[in-house]
Image (cartoon, rainbow, N blue to C red):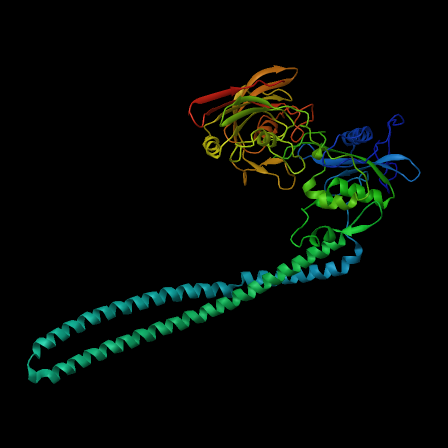
Amino acid sequence: MTTPNNTQTKFTSFSTSIDHIALPKYFTFPYYYQPHALAHIAMNELQSYLSSQTEWSHDFDSQGKMFAVLVVKTKDGKLGYLSSYAGNDKTPQFFVDSIIPSSKQDKILNLLRQELATVKQTLVALETATELNQLKSDLLEKQRASQLEISQFQAEMKDGKKRRKEERSKAEEQFSLESDRERLAAVVRTLGDQSSSEKRTFKALKTKWQQTISELLGKITQSEAEIQDKRDEYQRLDLSLKVEEQRSILLLNQSGQSKSLFELFFQKDGNHEPIAGSIDQNLPKLLQAAYQLSLKPIALGEFWWGSSPYDQIRQHKNLYPVCQSKCYEILDHMLEGIETDESPLEITPSLNKELDIVYEDNVLVVVNKPAEFLSVSGKYINDSVHARMAKRYPHATGPLVVHRLDMSTSGLLVFTLTAETNKHVQQQFIERSVEKRYTALLEGTIERRQGIIDLPLAGDMEDRPRQMVSHERGRNAETRFEVLSVENNRTKVHLYPKTGRTHQLRVHCAHQAGLNTPIVGDDLYGFKDSRLHLHAGYLKLRHPITEQEMAFEVPSDF
């Protein structure tokens, strides 16, 4: 298999026998799923093509890409699939086309782009004009000159005042007799006239400089206002262009109804823009092609091919869900009327699980949380350790929760029964005086027996809830590790987090600059398994009342 059966429709028939495979009852829930058997076969065939193709010169060893298949059915009942990659660069005919703007908007888009370019050119000319810089330079020069001349004149006035005071004292001694009063008065008048003259001169000097500086400031303000007007005009045109570009992107659903990105984003919330590259994601491209070709979507599968980017974590050939942050509003429309599998995100996996109380007194409770059990209630799932603790201790005060574990992580959780003890224990976590140790099973072997991982972490705003390594905006995150054993090509380690960032241990294990080996069962940064093999097994803290050190340990079950 090297090309699709029909290069015009991009439809590819299965080369593998699929006669024994039943169709799924519902379409794949895109944000969390196990691919249907047909999708698995289609992905295997696409991967076979990628391994042998020569049409595409992309270096996947340097930078991988996300690929996807959409199993579809033709009107006459024939099964096949469409293939896609995330992005919009030119690729072989094997893949569906990018979603392109409607030609109906071309005229207005071209006019707006031309107008925007003209305004941009004018704005750049205004911002780089020498006149404004010269005015600002002149202003600084005049301000310095005015300060210097005014200061010098003030010093002269001070000297003059001192001199006149001395002359008056001398005249008062010289003309102390009654007969000399008129002569003394004349001297005083002369000295007063001198003082008044200096004050008038000083006032005139300040007025002169104020006028000079005010004129320059006026010219600068006028120039800057002209620049700001152009900036405002540019922003208005840029927004208009964005709106029209969103109007020009028309997305279909199975009923043939089209909605523009403007309707899905701007019109819904004037401040809400689609994340860059949203329409270049695989499922929107695949659905658009399917609807245009009157093909019925059956099942989805998406995988990463090639090396991982540095900041994010992607595993070669691993399966991935659709990016909800980028695609939710788009797919809400494109999948309208199509029944999907039940959302696993809304299923409560903890309903039949019991909580093991490790320690309990009148102010402190320590629980061994099972895997796949929320620490606190979520958007869709109410059952959580916190909810059960609140029910178990109805008279407790304060927030109860001191710290959290990921839903998939098992292990020790601390709860307090009073507001005072909560503050006390929480402060220990803030001060990092609590000793914590996790046990993890890694999907492979590592070279070092022990060491420290220091990689700053930040949320991936385009693909929540994933975290990413970011040396620019990430927060410091440090983990110490030591190897315990190696068995069946899997490594058991102890992890000692110095900081407590979201998904810190999972990212530090999986990232290429960390251990480069994901935790077994990590469905975000590694490969799915029966569970995430990460367990918070040891905890040491001070009792909030007695101040005595208390250590708790529960071994992992893996």
